Length: 204
Length: 204
DNA sequence: TCTAGTCGAGACGCAACCGTTCCGTCTCGT
DNA sequence: ACGAGACGGAACGGTTGCGTCTCGACTAGA
Image (cartoon, rainbow over all chains, first blue to last red; front, side, top):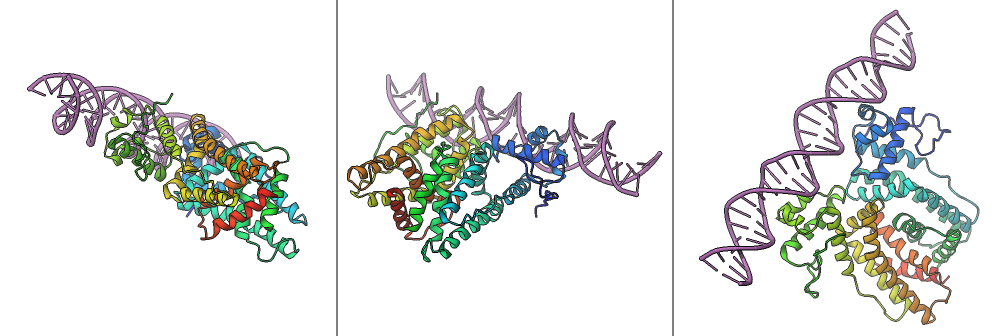
């Protein structure tokens, strides 16, 4: 049972890299944690180094979370729920483009593009981490994207028997592949071209 | 400069998990290496454990590769070049389905589906590993897939101004996303349905 | 038969990190 | 003014892995 004292207190304040946290020490620890996580990866991440980078003692960390795993789950969940707003532009094309833009913005963050694949790889062999990531991130995003497609069906932009499962893979896969796996750049109009292709695919 | 004595000697012999290697000791080490890599990940991988699992001494490993990184690069390259044959079924639809089938078969291997995301995440912070993986795996596959699309253009199945770059992301992304990231199952006709969507997208 | 090389096994020194515990200090609320 | 508690910092014993090295056994070719 992970103790997670890292809860929001002042919802309208959102310090840049770090999530919404209680106090300055917790924020410094969280920021150092994510920097270390991006630089070294989960497996190599040392709480000693995190403490040092945060200008804190190890005790300050262990006073907040019982272990590295609990800390990771709590912090990752905290940033994940700090999610982007749903699009709802009125048209499927607008929604898809907004969705892709949100994903691209997130993955273009140098820290995120290293942390996310690392945590996903780690979660393949860590059930607790996997479950936390899946329920906090995947399910949230997935339900929002599903809602986006269902609205398109209601508007008559998509047939009622649209393959939602497949459409979700098409929405997320190519951009993740390019930005998080290949670390390849995207041309300025890449998202627009991708949107065109995806609309054709989903409607097919 | 990685020493890579792990070269093919008898090309027609391909022991299951392990690549084409020189002798039984090297094969045992390689097999143990991949099992450990899948189980623990690159960062946590211990050469002591690999040696123990292979029933070998540590010296047997250090006699072959100078370091963990060189070992990983050499072995990963060895299995990667042991690539599947190109499709060339005569139609774009057949080629795409064959391509996706090949990718799916590879990613459905429990070891591969853990090793590949792990090495890709690791390569984000290890330039030498990244370069080795990219030249040995990505470029090889990418050129084959490009050739597949160019043939379709020559046959008149695709317009001459087809966006190859985008098409490659569409081919690889969704399946990788589903199998390697989400670890979600695929329905029996998933690849066929995906092929239909992708053909519509690429031709759009 | 002798010799050179590899084999499995494991000890070695060294370094890093874990999780805990203790300092002495500083900042609160009362 | 006082005590409770969190703070940074440093040390602790224990574990793990690295890369080197040595050992006796086994196997090859000369």
